[in-house]
Length: 198
Image 1: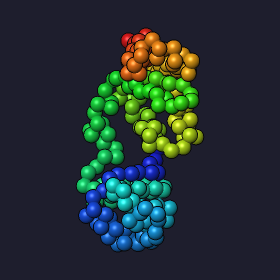
Image 2: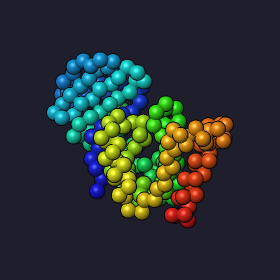
Image 3: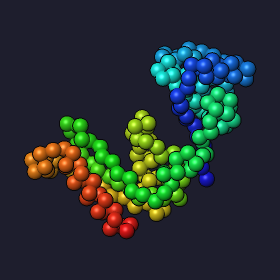
Image 4: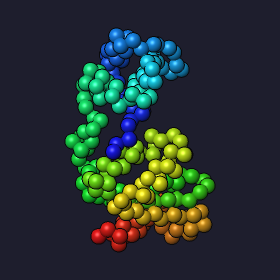
């Protein structure tokens, strides 16, 4: 069963900002101020903030999913995305390996290259569990929680290559180019994944 959405962000045009404000006023939202916001509105446990940068709208609270599905998307944004991931992004649901790296610009810590296999069933499970781009997650605790969910997902196959500072220096001396070293690391991950999921 899908975990209810409790936070949603989307870009919003200037005319849509005014349209959203009018809808919120009609529905009895209370308006307040927030730093960097065009406006902030609240009703019950639902918060709607439109930020100047973008502009973008942030919806938070227990009623986020219903608000987005039945008010924001149809009446303001004019597009339905929630629940239509398979239609809007079918490539996410085809069987494939995904690979990325972290730590290539850090002075401390390892360079980590990780990959995972996913298919339609796994992708749907991950989306329903709240897994998203790590750049959109601001809490280390949430990242640890999602990492556990990912590892425990039935059918999930993953491979990780961890390169500590000493090994990094040795490999860099050998490759003399970060992109070549990353390509080598990606190839190791792919080879490991293929061994687990041919």
